[in-house]
Image (cartoon, rainbow, N blue to C red; front, side):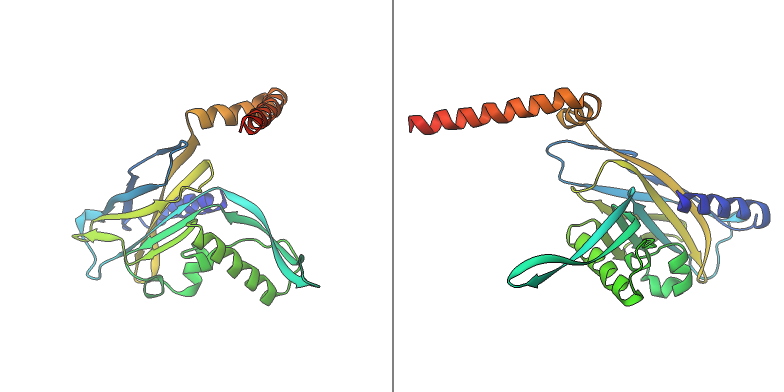
Length: 253
């Protein structure tokens, strides 16, 4: 939410003091993504147009960065060590605001578009995510845990970077495709678009995307949340019934 407030304040500032700056008109191919038992992921198209004042385009082409981000989570990372032949938990680190999903695409590699400070402010890249560690670990130790978190989520398809894949046509129209992993959680997602000119973010816009369950998955989730006692009894009865059926089949063989 703090990122959306920042973008809103920036947009207000542009409207008041920089009326001659370009603006973005973004959209996304799906505003709602439904998760069913057969859900294998989705391929979202983020597209739009750059509107320049009086139709005057700059001599140097602008760059586009798009970021698709899922709900934030509080995560505790634990490091395991082998002691006397047994794996046990050792050091831990907690992060208060790790995005459950993060995907980024840009028209050029980020280090060619903006400097380190600007990339950190707008979280342009998984290595620039502000995870808000709540533990008192040393800086080197936190960096090790953060690298571990990024590695785990990257391998699961939950952290994705696609530099150089945003297509810009005639300096005005842009499009990018970002994969939405089958492992995403339900909730409110944001598709953020940043227009970068001469190393400076000159415009930004946000579109909301809702990921929700549907069909039988939605029924089960609703039942577990609204009728937890009955849901628990039904789950126990189902487990007992399946156990009895398995035992009956085994005795007949």
